[in-house]
Image (tube, rainbow, N blue to C red; front, side):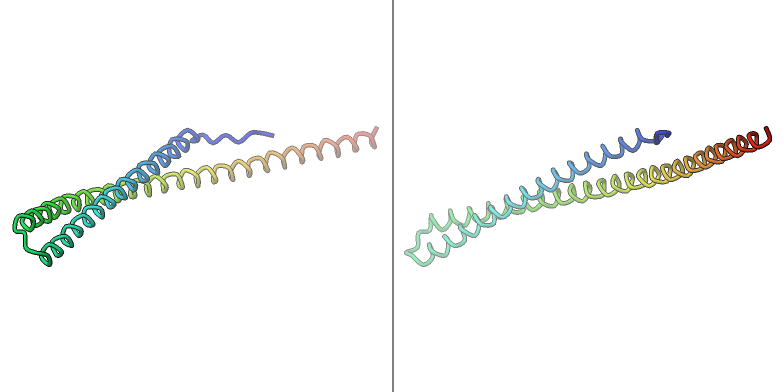
Length: 152
């Protein structure tokens, strides 16, 4: 029996590799986003700690130097938080870009797999036709042999 060889197998292999690479890029982008979000949460928690410290300072005896230092710390943390929010936005865009790339790679693999499947079905039909022809020839040969024996 003949062996099925898909003539575009190299392309399918490349598409699979591109899909795997896109999955890795998406995973890395998602991991970076998670890191950036964790940093943002840590900065917000730190700022909230400074705000809480400022409340405590206002309840105790007023120390103007400590209050001013606390307010500067809160303002600096606000700036850090805003910068980190921009980092999160950039990471989100990178994740979305990677997601689109992955989706496209997956679609291309599906198309190639469908083409391969269709080619395999055609191969099976051709094999059935060859097999049917061989059976017909065998039956004709045997029928011819019986006819020669009866005539001889």
